Length: 241
Ligand code: OAD
Image (cartoon, rainbow, N blue to C red; front, side):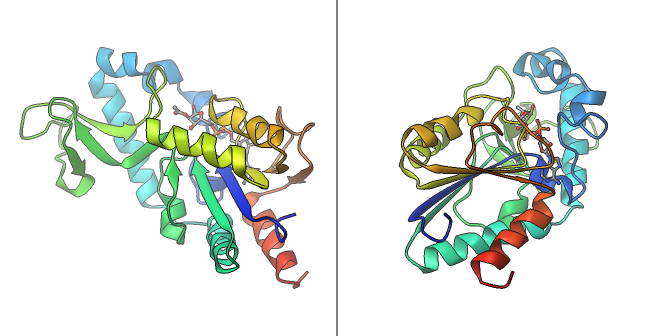
C-alpha cells in the first residue's frame, strides 16, 4: 500500500514519543492524565484561573522534552518522507505532539495541530519568545511588556490553528494512504481525520500498542511499539525483511 501510494498522510500522537521517555496522556500507569487533571492544567480556563500552576507544569514538561531525543519511530517516519518525496510522492506529517521530536529527527513541513511547547508567547502583545530568552525564575513568567507568557500549545477550550486544520482536512481527504501512529484516537478533530481519509478512498494503517476505537475499521493494524513497527515497515519497503 505504501509503495504504491502517491500521497501519504501520517497522524501521530503521544505514543510515538513514548519510547523517547515522554509520558503519554491516557495510558493507565504512565499517562499524564492518570496523575493530573487535564481540566486543571490543559484548559484555557485553568490558565486564567491559576497561571502560576499551569505555566509551572508546562515548564516542567518542556524541561522533560528538552532532555529527550528522537527514537527509531521518529527516524523511520523522517526516512519514509524522504523516500516518498524522492519518488515524486507527497507526504504530510500531522502531529498532536508538542515536543518537536519529529523535526529533530529530520521530518520537514510538520503540521503541529496542537501547537508547540518549544516557543511561548506574551498574552499582552502576542510576541513569540524562544525559551532561552525567558526568565523562569518565577511563575508565571512575564515578558518585558509585563504580560504573562504562555506556551504556544492549544489547550482544551481553544480553537485549533485555522491553517493547520485546513491542511489536515485537505491532505486527509486527498491521500491514498492514511497512517495513524501512537494515538488513542479519542481527541477531536484529529480522531476523525482517518474517517475523512477513508470516505475519500484512502487505505488506512494503524500502529499502536493496543486496540483503539479505530482498530476495527482500519485496513491494517500493526500492534507493537512505534519504534519497532515503523522501522520494520521501512525494512519491508526496502526489501530487507
Ligand atoms: P494518548 O495518551 O491519548 O494516547 C497514546 C496512545 O499511544 C495510546 O493509544 C497508547 O496505546 C499508544 N502507545 C503508547 N506507547 C506506544 C508506543 N511505544 N508505540 C505505539 N503506540 C503507543 O495520546 P494522544 O492520542 O496523543 O491534548 O492524545 C491526544 C491529545 O489528548 C493530546 O494532544 C493532548 C491530550 O489531552 C492536549 O493536551 C490538548
